[in-house]
Amino acid sequence: MVAALRILLISVLDLYFYVILAAVIASWLVGFGIINAYNPVARSILRALHALTEPIFAPVRRIIPAIGGLDLSPLIVLLLLQFLRNWLAIGTFF
Image 1 (tube, rainbow, N blue to C red):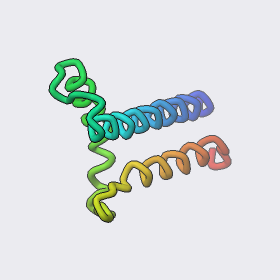
Image 2 (cartoon, rainbow, N blue to C red):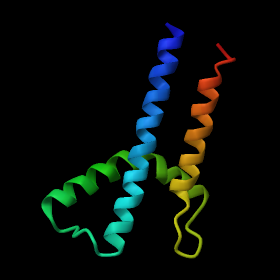
Image 3 (tube, one colour):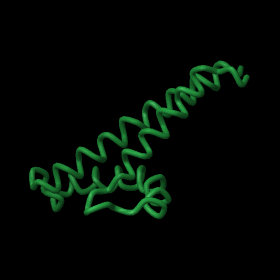
């Protein structure tokens, strides 16, 4: 039972890793003008990515603000996710 829960948590963390990566790439594409944010399909995808990532990014942004206009919160969150995933994968605490 515990092993199945650990595998499920690792899978969710892996999936969230890719959601964060997609949000970062989408923000770059909007910033460079490749994606038109006024397109209804693109806007709905951007809203979904924002809704999925902003609850995690906001507390990190309060602690570490943007440095020179560069938002480091996705990098910090990705590092924390990898740390948590590796900690779960080792599994010495169960």
